[in-house]
Image (cartoon, rainbow, N blue to C red; front, top):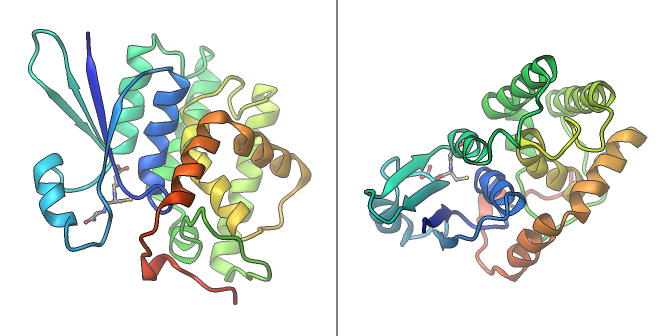
Length: 222
Ligand SMILES: N[C@@H](CCC(=O)N[C@@H](CS)C(=O)NCC(=O)O)C(=O)O
């Protein structure tokens, strides 16, 4: 029997941690969690204890015989989950799969204005938040990308069935809800669908129970 532990940050703020956590729930895996509160005095020692890269998320697996393995980086963990699930979390169609991988890579390596200005903060909602031009351009890009994927796949998830792409964009959905971002109808419907996902609700409920406050992530409406 494989024992799995996912090392994560605060559920309210850690968008990178949310991605593999959601996918593991969608895969129906049972796993334990170790939560490292980010930007606290205890963080460095806990990172040293649990994460070779000193970042979260990290997945640790211990089989019956095998040595413990450590997989770090949200994308590498999601790819590993997909491989363990016989490719369930990428579409079979190579063109759609390539589009999905492009969308996930774009999220993994970009959207810096969105990340900086609209940090994930699941406990809050703001009305009257105005994104900068740079953040608005990224919001527009994400809207058109989601619509392109939903049209190409036929939905209801970005690539048809729930995939790594949905796990990667779920924290963006959370940001759009927190900062009440104006979106086209198809994107609003997609956000609602993600919000209703049982695993998303479970993560959010735990985020709302957390008490730590990371001041730099507490953006006020402007
Ligand atoms: N590319 C990495 C980024 C991981 C990352 O930056 N994690 C943040 C938390 S959301 C972290 O561990 N920060 C702690 C630090 O940098 O000291 C991934 O996708 O897993």
